[in-house]
Image 1 (tube, chains in turn brown, green):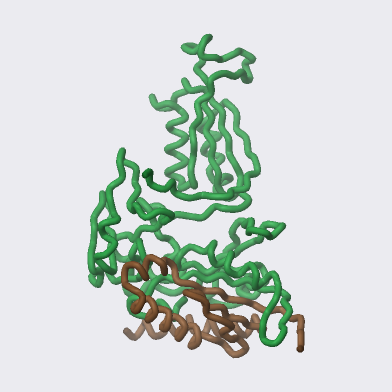
Image 2: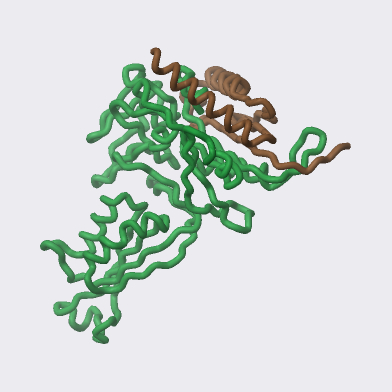
Length: 87
Length: 290
């Protein structure tokens, strides 16, 4: 059993209004939204970040290189801005 | 956040991002940073990213990222209030987006399945199933939803996209904020009979506080008291001459209260103005009766 003490950044993201969404749209559609949510979370992972778990409508990501992770997030924002310009 | 914004018909998400030393054992993490993650996220408004000080420091160095300090928040079973920061990425407005007030689905105004107009606000719904929940509130109280515990309402018209604007779900055109945590209580004591422009002064004060976007104000009527002039004011004596005391209580963030304080002082020109520390445990809309 290995145990290491380290500084880790956690990102816990959940869907606002998921209970209401399930009631209004049904289990199948709500499950589809979760699948898309997990896929987006995976696609957004920076090097050094990993999806630790998914419980209900929550995903937990852990990253131990804060600067690199934040830079990656920045790059994504810039890419998004650029893509909007060409729409 | 930006990834889900690109997804068609996707609800708003909330993000909490604490960081700190944890123990990693066989791929599992143990420590405060992880323990408070769900509580930080729960404190976020739909569409909002909140982080703790460790990530805020890292985020400040990054181009295009804005980090704004919020008041520290008392989290359950955490001894000290935790300073929280709102993170926004400067994304320019794109396609107009409105938000379903029930399930927080992001919609384009012409892509909504149902719309309801109440007063000057149009609510867009992603499905017809919830529309019946929307009823006008009695006595002119703006209470758009009978669904308990919900405060958000989508606004009509083009709403700029981007994390910060998504967080500004509005009710009656005014942004709803969570003010749970260490705040200040502003207490004003004045005579009921004081007037300003022909209106009772306490009424003018409440209107000012509302217009300034403070979280809330309560006016209490005193039944007896004495003040600077040492004269007793009770229901029995001097009612006509001086009036009974009224107390206006306001709780909000220190920044909000300090911003409004000079205007309150100018209006009061007398009376008592006090500030107290206050820990807000709950700031929620009163559930509908019945």
